[in-house]
Length: 345
Image (tube, rainbow, N blue to C red; front, side, top):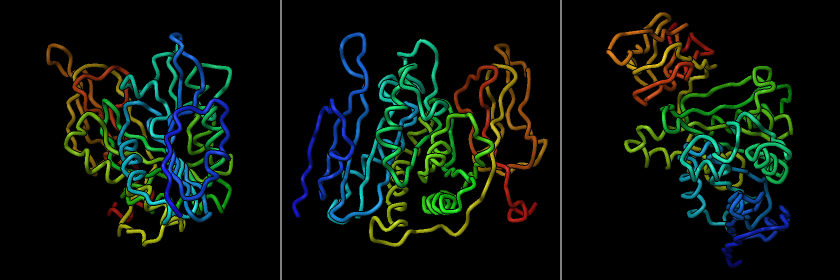
């Protein structure tokens, strides 16, 4: 079968089944969602690889937050390398779901009159702000057609996040098994287990997808703030994550290169009380004891005004890298081990 690559620049009357029905093909283009003031379109870009054989559908999305681009580049890399003749099933890639925030290089889209965080508003709302409208369109036309889903995130312009995989855990044994397999196949050492009770009403993608019967995980990788040191590594890890999950579920041939050791965690976002210069005292993935000073906040005169202190024994999963931090922002994401006996506690 000849592999056909098509650039479909615009789909006005979107039909998901038509998009994926031609076996052994690769397609890319845009779906139009709404008109902007200048007459141009709010769009969702897509990349589709339909395998020569039938199988599962894996949906991969990146740049729900526009400054978290590791997954975008990883998806592009994998899409270019993937041979549809060797694929069972379908890969649907959304390289920049929140395209307006991606264009702005920021976490959220500038068109919304009131700040909207896309990963706090799933499954979206067709009658609300454009962020919620895009989220709803994506949900109805892509998420609900998937068997498996990966959402890529990162630290964006201000944070560094150690590579980790997050999976929701609820009351469905089959879904619990699938998302756990997905998370462990990614190759990240940190595994964040998220209870469904803790996400109720939060608008997260993976937990809402779980509610709709889609096995969905989130993968966090790096951040723009010090990305120059890790760009190739994080992009390769994102591409490998997708490939590994496809091998885990027999969409591609091959053995998943499982790592020997994982650390299962629950997390805490540690917020600052005061703003100022953020002087970090710890390193990523360092294990610290309860009471450890993680950072100091200094004012414009160099005076220490407050500290961020570890509330329990934990790993440093993420920290605020930008020199200045605002009051109330995330200073750290801390990982509390679910099995402290494995880390000698």
